[in-house]
Structures are given as C-alpha cells and as structure tokens.
Length: 308
Length: 300
Image (cartoon, rainbow over all chains, first blue to last red; front, top):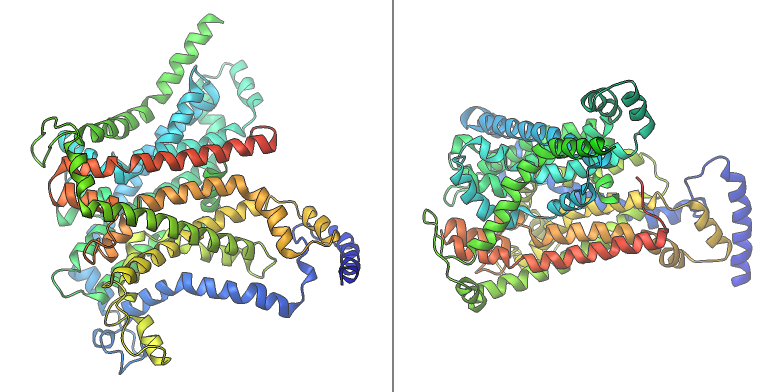
C-alpha cells in the first residue's frame, strides 16, 4: 500500500518537475482527478458561496415583489416573482427622505475620509521618514488606538460631543469618525511609505527640496495605490458605522442611511418589508459598485493592515 | 548636527499635529472620561458626582448584567470558533486552482462590504416568525410542520444571531488567510508529496504552522470585533427575548442612552476593557512568535 503510494508520488513529482516551468502557483493540485475535485472543492465552494450570497438575493427579491405577494407564501412561491415591481424603490426615492439620507451618508463619509487621509499622510510620513525621537512609540500607540472599539467610546463621546456643541450636527460624525479611520490608514500608509527608497529623498534633499516638496512631489505620487486603498477602506467603514450615527444624531433629516431606514420603516407593529429591503439594497449599491472597481485595492488594504 | 536633530523633532511634531489633535480630543480624552463617568452617578443632562464603586457593585449584582456577560463570552467564543473553521476552510478552497478565481474571490467578500445593518435587515426578514423563507422551504420539504421561531426563543435566537455574525465575519477571515496561504511556497507541498504525506498531514505539518502568525492577528481582530458587536444584535433582536441575546455593548447603550443612566452604562462598557486587553495580549504574543520564527522583523 505504502509502496504504491510512494511510487505514485515519485511519478507525480516527475510530472511536477516538468510542470515547474509552466506554472509555479498550482502546487500539487494536478494530482487530483476531476470527480475528486468536484466533491472536494467545487461542491463545498458552491454551498458556501450560496449561503454568503443568499441574503442579497432575498433582499433583491423582496424589494421588487408586489406587496401582496410578500405576505402570502402559499399562493406565490417566495423564491421568484413573475411580476416584478418598482413600487417599493419608487416610494423610497420619492415619498421618503431617502435621497437626503443617502446624501448625508455620502457627505459625512467623504468629509471624514478626506480629513483622516490628510492627517494620516502627515502622521505616517513623520513616523516613517522624519523619525523624530519617540516615533516608534507613537507608531505603537497609533496601533493601540486602532484596537479601541467604538462600543466602549460612544457613551463618554456622546457627552463630549454635547459639550463641544456638536450634538445633532453632521460634524458630530465628521469629527468622530477620524478616530476610527486615522489609526487604520496611518498604519496602512506607514507600510507603503517604508517601501519607497530612501535614496530618492536624499537626492531631493541634496537638491535643496524642502520636506513639504519631498512629500508632495516624491512620496505621495509613489504611494498612490496606498492612498486609494486607504480611502476606499475608510469610505466603507464610514458607510458601515452605526453606533455613533445612532447616538449622536437625533433629527430624522440628518440621519445616515443605516440608522434612518431602521427607524423610519419599523414604526409600530407594521414593518414595511418592501421598503426596508429596497432601502437596504439601494444603500448597499454605491459601496458594492465602488468595491467592484477597486477590488484589488480593497483586498490589499484589508490584508495589508493585517500583515503589518 | 545638533540643529538638524532639533529641527527633526520640531518637524515631526508639526506633522503629527492633525492626527494627534483628533486622537487626543475624540479618543484619548473620551476613553479617560468613560472610566471617570463609571465612578459617578451621571445622568443625561447632569454631570453627576463621584460615587466610588457603587455602579460596579450594582451591575455585578444585576442578573441582566450577568446574563449579558455570559452571552457576550458565549457569542464571542462560539462565533469566533465557527468563523475560524469555516474561514480557514474557505481560504484553502479558494487557494485551489479554480476557473474565474478573481471573480469568486471578489464575490466572497461582498458580505463584508455591505453595511452590517443593511444585511442584518435581510437576516431579520429571513428569520421572520411567520414569513421566514427557511421555515417555508423546510415545510415544503416535509421536514417540519410548524414555523421555526428563530428570534423568539432563547436558544434559537442565540444561535440565529451567531449564524448572522458568522456569515458576516467569514469573508474577512477567509480573504486574510488566503493572502497568507499564497505566501506558502508550493515546493514544500511538492517535497511532502514526494515523502508520501497525506493531505491532512500536509495541512497539519505545513499549512497550519506557516499560517499561525497571520491566524493570531486575524483572530484577535475577529474576537475584538465580535466581543464589541452592537449592530447585529440591535437590529435582529435588540437584546430580546427577555434579555437572552443582550451583549455588553447593547446593554450599555440601553442603560446609558435609552435609560439615561450614563454612570451605570459607562460602568458596563468599562467592564469590557479587561476582556479586550486579554485579546490584545494574545495578538502580541502571536506577533512575537512570528518574529522568533522568521528570525528577523518584517519589512513589508
């Protein structure tokens, strides 16, 4: 039994040597036959992907089904609909303040991201390149700041927001979100800045460039992928944020999408499922579209922060 | 030389200023304030005065708090364990040679991109007591005769929220671990195959040891975010039925913001800190081990 296995392995490795030139990334996967792969790889993969995507399918279905079909599962198979309707989405866009909430979310997310990126670029550059005394400690402290979760900060922060007179204004969120974003993006940008060769900066310093010129003309252009990664990730985090938006904003017309649809469509006992799902769907779309264009940047932001 | 040194520190300070201002005003100060508030009887609108450990004494004796601590730990441990197992499995599947690999990988991450509250709303509808699509399918298949009460029963609701949390967390873990898997040189597997190693042996002796450093970091983050979860519970059950799915985070919100008892709420959220420190320690030792294994520090 073992002999045969060793023999098979020997044959396989001979094949592997032939294959090395062709493809380095496959490892030993060519050893398995198609039926094996179907059972071992494709079936589990399809199952997992099905479970991961089903809620979105269900969200979409519910958002485009006529109202009376939603609550009558015996007469209409819930998995598909033959007469899709846009009434929920139309009601959402024209009969509620949804466009306003969408605008609030976008405005707050973009402002907080811009503020955080500016602050992070300076901080990351100072930590990795100016290397003032104690820079390493500051780098460590910023990483620790990343580990402070909003759910232990929101209570004292709500009193702080009140003291500063920011309660129920967009600034309550625009100025507090950077506390989540700055540690993350500083850490990410530090990784990018470290990969830029020191010699480039030395040359520029020799030629009499100031620190500001070096940052703007040399470092930033080279760190563009990092900047894109950081901004995409920051936008997603802002869009996703819930606990601060729920606590610091009171008036309906100032709310962000996640908070607003939860309170607007769940009044009393009558949950408006069609509108809720349409709201969730439309609220997710901008992020999904953004993500579709920048998948690689997104993944590198995510894994980059973990690898560091 | 001396002047340059001074200059350097001054420049550093100047460049750090914006980030430091945000973090000091809105992170460090509130963090300290939170601890202080937990020792006061503050309420919404009144600053409160120092009451010592009264809030802590009160919450420790409160059966709601005990349930919340129990469920927070249960939720974190069970959800993280399942997320880790499924995430690692998915990462290994995605590391295989697959057609349309890039698209599959992109699709897998979608649950992580979509705002949690919005996907939680979808789960809320999937777990509806009357119109749940799961109940409907199982009834059609003849497996059950009555609708499942997903969110109305103590243990059903606990496992339902854990399921939603796992659903949301798996993509992050899978994609991060996939990045780690891709750094494992294929030649190791080739050598192991040559030595007659089975698939399981290769996983235990090659894949897992090489992944431990990244697993330590990813799981610390996952544990951290699961422990401090708020959104999913707030949307799906709001702590119900009868406090069965109350987490410490939702309890502190209900106490401080809805109940107006800032002091007690701050005590509940400050009580989360020891657990978070424990999670950070795990991450720290995981990283140390990585340096020891690699023999040098990373420069990526």
